[in-house]
Structure formats: structure tokens, C-alpha cells
Image (cartoon, rainbow, N blue to C red; front, top):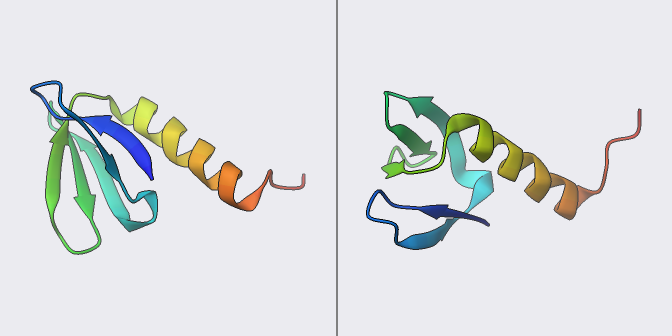
Length: 64
């Protein structure tokens, strides 16, 4: 789960594994696998970082 904020500032969490797309339209829109769309305050780059951090926390660092 990653923490995000609605445009009104209210925080909530999203299942990072359900995220299908993240777009800047110019608001940031998260599209989930079930096609639900959520508009959030955070930018695309910040959300990508949070998803990567989530995956590292679950699966551990990738061997390189």
C-alpha cells in the first residue's frame, strides 16, 4: 500500500499492485486494474518512487 492525497488534502492508501497507469493530465491520475480512476496531489515521479520503494520493501532489492 502507498499513501497518497486527494486534491482536498485528505490522505488515503492505494494498493500499489493494483496500479495500471499513472498519468499527468495536468492533474495526476492513477488508473487501477479495475479501471477506477483516482486524482491525487502527488506528481508522477513521486508516485513511481513510492511504488518502487513499496516493491523493494516487499521483495527486497534487485540483485545487479
